[in-house]
Image (cartoon, rainbow, N blue to C red; front, side, top):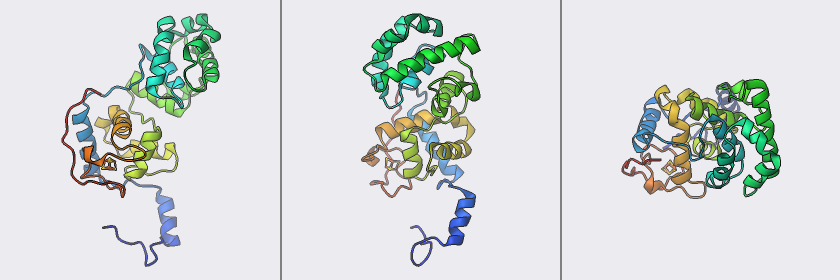
Length: 248
Ligand code: SF4
C-alpha cells in the first residue's frame, strides 16, 4: 500500500518543490522495467509498425498522413498512392490534385496532400530525394514533427528513438512507467529508463500493448502479460496472462 504523503494526503510545498526539481520519475525499478520489456519481447519478437510502406520515403509519407487517422485508414489510401508514386520525383509528377484524390478518405486530406508535395519538393531540393536519417533535418520538412521524425528514425534507420503517440502517453501515465504531462516528458523518461537492448522495438511494443490490451476506455487486465507488475490504480487483475508469441 502506498504511504500517505501527509495527514491530509496533500504533498507539502517543500515536497512539491523537491518533486518539481526532480521531475517526474518512473514508478518502476530497473529490474521491473527489464522484466516488462523482456515479456513484451517474448510476446512479439519482431514487431512491425502497422503502416504499410516500401521504402523510407513512403514510410515518411504514411506517417505524415497518419496524423489523426487510423493506420488501417491510411493503408487503404496509400496502397493506390504508393503504386503510383513511391519516390519524391514520382510524387511531384503525380501532382497535388491526384495525391488529394488518392487520400481523400483520410481526415485533413487537403492539407496533407499539400504537405506531401511540399516535403517531396524539399527532399529533392535539399537532400537529393533521399530521406535524411537525422532528426534536425527531418523536422524541417513540411508536415513533419518530432513524433513523425522519431517513427522514421526508428523504423527506417534503426535508431533507438521513442515516438510518443496517444497510446504511449496514456500507458506512461496510467501505469506510472513514465509519467509526464507532455509527449516530450514521457519520451525523455522512457528513453532514460528503457534498457538499450529493448529500445529498437520499445515504441512498437508499447503502442500495440495500448491498442489491444491497455485500452483507453477499459484496459483488458485479464489479458495482460504484465498484470502482476503493473502499478496502475485502474488495474482489475493481478494475474499475468500467459505469453503467447504473436507475429505483430
Ligand atoms: S494490468 Fe491493466 S492497467 Fe495494467 S498494464 Fe495491464 S491492461 Fe494496463
